Image (cartoon, rainbow, N blue to C red; front, side):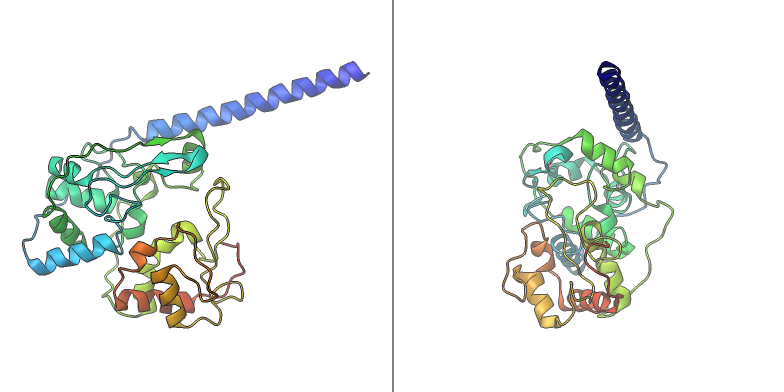
Length: 299
């Protein structure tokens, strides 16, 4: 009898492992095929501006809402960021954008920023386009114009590889690594003037959604390894920002120190938040305060 039980358990284990292996193979194959897809997204008719005000706007966006010039992205000189080891998800390093830009036309750069589509029509990997795809056309032009002012940096690209888990999470729509697949390429950005309002703050909050969840109440990002910190609750719940003032929020966002004196995890994009102007910071705060309170972890 015991022998039959052990045989049955062995068969069950083999079946489970085979099923798991088939699932992994299917997901990874689908990811790899999708990365070869060529998107029918036209190159917009964009020509760089030489207007100092436009270039200054691009500089501001690159250091704040778009986050291009941050250490965890393309770096302060846009010559390539620092490597981000993410355990079984892989290791990613933003490439040298100064050399990349030399190979792209102005329109191709604009398409990359808006749609996550490379010069060859295929999807870019890992670039957080959904955080800033809402930017109006004038702001996309400003970013393109600013990039064109940068000197070329002779630096090779850093390490970049995606692990099996990362590919599976992308296919399950839990991470956007195959960037273009996750975007609505027919959508037009909303026309909302920058102002300290919840309407504009909802757009600014795209920076937060990827980590803190659609409901912005935080909790562990599904499928991520323990090395990835757990995002906090940004809603006006007792487990979140209830009782906070704007000054508390601004201090935490710009210094990385919470109102209780605790230092926030370095995973928080303090560098980008600290470069926001008063309008952007106030708008984000007003929007977060307008949210319905949600318990921590409901994302």
